[in-house]
Image (cartoon, rainbow, N blue to C red; front, top):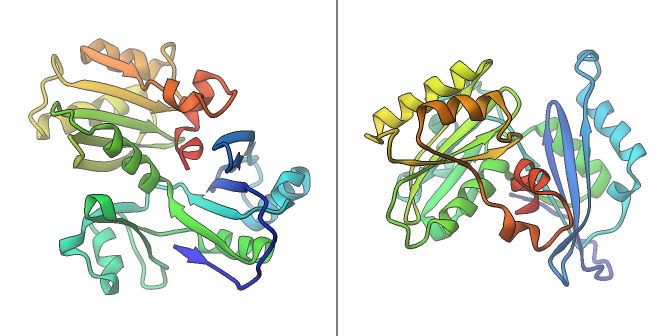
Length: 273
């Protein structure tokens, strides 16, 4: 989706991507001539100040990080929540966005719905963006594009699955929720989001999903994305019950930045934006 004005500025060859959630934000600056990430920062909101308006927390971030007030040719805001789903183009009607979400999340008549077209794969991502955060960015930038984090994630995984006939499961781990994506040769076989509190929750949903798709834990490959490493309790419990578990390979992604393997895995969506 796009929020635009008519201002024309001199080209800077710079792009700003900001990933937002209710617990914080992360952002990176791209040199669009060389397609490289030139800087990156992450801001975690203090959970002890829940009474503070989210706009005030974003305002603090803008005061603390002058890069956010710089001039850019492109600005992309990435909404990261578990309020999204994917709908095949053949079944999609822009007038009934809320109806697609009502099966996996609680929706209200007052909710604002948006969608991202994913034309190469004949589907759309339908989601609920953070309207108050978008309004804050309108005041800051005037114009910007916005997408859902899962639109970027799923698109990237589908591209990487080309000519690979084996079914592969990916899990992207966020704070409090994770997404399971199963792909096969540029086809999305499953996408779902789950809330979790413990490694046992995490394992249960993986094995339940595998059972539904007739995936044998002895055979199917599982790749983990997000804030996880081989020492994590979540990695260890998955490794105990599923034979082929690995962290996603981010070497191709790292060529355009100087950040670590762990940072590229944790910010896979942002750096691929």
